[in-house]
Length: 348
Ligand code: NDP
Ligand code: GDR
Image (cartoon, rainbow, N blue to C red; front, side, top):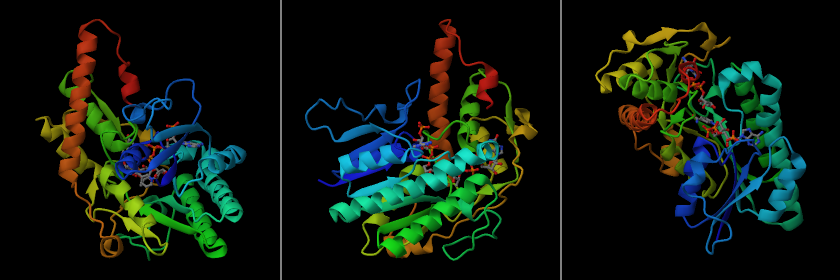
């Protein structure tokens, strides 16, 4: 049985990847951070008590800022494949917490690479590693962007991902480790964090439709993104590690839409006009914005045989349907006298 170790297992991608790998028969180990509240919501449905026979999902406390802990976990798990998904992944927040972002995203990757390097040297086990790169690394580069497009990062997050990308290439070339950089364009799902724009919009659509919220405050509505479905994208991560040779791949849908297009589709789906509800709050502007991301995933299609299955409209509808159901549950609770999240919190 192959063993996979995932950093960032509690995140959107970590949860989809875990389901995907369990489905392939893997034993999956994930690194979770200690928090004062439970932070395993996204994987709770698939987590079984480790005392039960036949369990194939195991969680370990750790943090990308803690090299000793990471090394201990790798030694204990003895993974065949490592997926480095852990990150402070919010671009806007990285302007407020640049040093922390760099420590986790850039140096954290370096800590992991170095731990894997020493583990391979000691055990001669041919560990393969996936590094979660981002289209944010292209930043201000002209679209469409592919593997040959020079990076032009526009945030501390993006600059940290560029550093991690080059650390990964250096460990591949200097240490001969099988490492792949995935350069993934935005991918979303009903499990997307609620402060990213797609989920913020679909969550608000559900709540506005059911009269639980009356306004949605957003930043730049003009920026364009190549939005795909997270469930499709985790398959690409796995495919990269199954090839004969390690390489780097862009993963994208090849279609690009503006935040306005997103609003149009999400509100129209429930027969509302977004112009009646959306207001601009400059708090959500970024000091340096990434205006237009539009990926060209030809290489992944030709070499990995990977194609996205879910398109933009289907994705938006899937997320709105899910968030309408969440809003219905919220409404039931409210009508039963429970105190709901204050409206201000819904506009984070
Ligand atoms: P999320 O923000 O949903 O998840 C991030 C994960 O990283 C969470 O499990 C989080 O733990 C964990 N994490 C945060 N800080 C640390 C730390 N110091 N040590 C260890 N783990 C930590 O991100 P996604 O699932 O959306 O993305 C996965 C990866 O892919 C990230 O690296 C992201 O930057 C990258 N990426 C994402 C894209 C997207 O569109 N989703 C596109 C391109 C790249 P906790 O739950 O405790 O907060
Ligand atoms: P992004 O995603 O920065 O592309 O990073 P996000 O959804 O945060 O922003 C997309 C675009 O929407 C604009 N926007 C807003 N964004 C947020 N979050 N909140 C708002 O209120 C709002 N209003 C407008 C933004 O300015 C931006 O142009 C995501 C993350 O998952 C990264 O980790 C990942 O690397 C990249 O995608 C690819």
